[in-house]
Amino acid sequence: MKSTIRRSLWAIVVGLLVCGCSVFQALKLKDCTYEYSHISDVTFLEMTHSELVSIQGIARVTRYLRNPTEDVKVGFTLHLKVSNPNKGIASMERLYYTVCLDDSLQVAEGSVPENFTVLGGTSANLALPLSFSMNQLFSGQGKASFRKLALNMINRGDSPSKITVNLRPVIRVGGAAMSVPNNIPLTFEYPTPEESGSKPRQ
Image 1 (cartoon, one colour):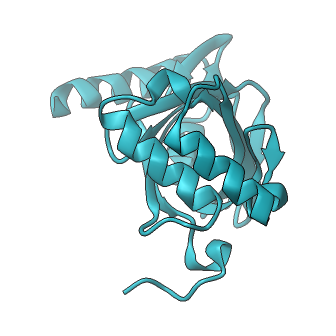
Image 2 (cartoon, helix red, strand yellow):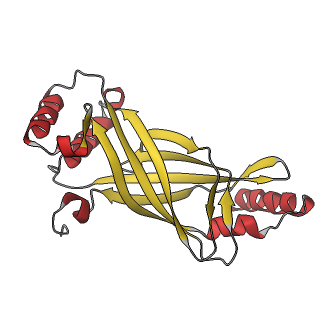
Image 3 (spheres, one colour):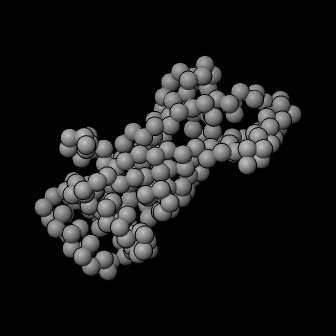
């Protein structure tokens, strides 16, 4: 596995050198740090977050969890803080991602097709709009995970949901797109104490 990854990385390096591009562009991308910032634009059962945490919203979500017959979508925008510790610019042409609940339950995948650039020594916000069907995965292992997520959206969960985002940036080298050989995993809990308005859990 390590030798395969090493060969893939060298292939990118060689490609960069052959095309006369700087190898440091790939290294800068690899050295960037990705941190969870916050979640915004939460929607569920066609309600916004402020509506979800109202008395009427909590009652409607509770009824849905007792009898999940509607084909509903969960949507939110995940904001990541991307920091570039290098002196030069780090940029990517596209970013592919997958999102998992509780380690292994994949619920969403997609890409950010626009160019994304972080100046040297600075940080930038990377927004990932996510949407997935609650009913499609509301069975088996998914049932407990989605129930917990729904309760956390209305600040009624007993424990936070564990969310893992796997990132794979893509750069363009001499007219050809090349992806960083390894996924960049980012795991966090939702909601954080600040988002739920509660004290840190012990």
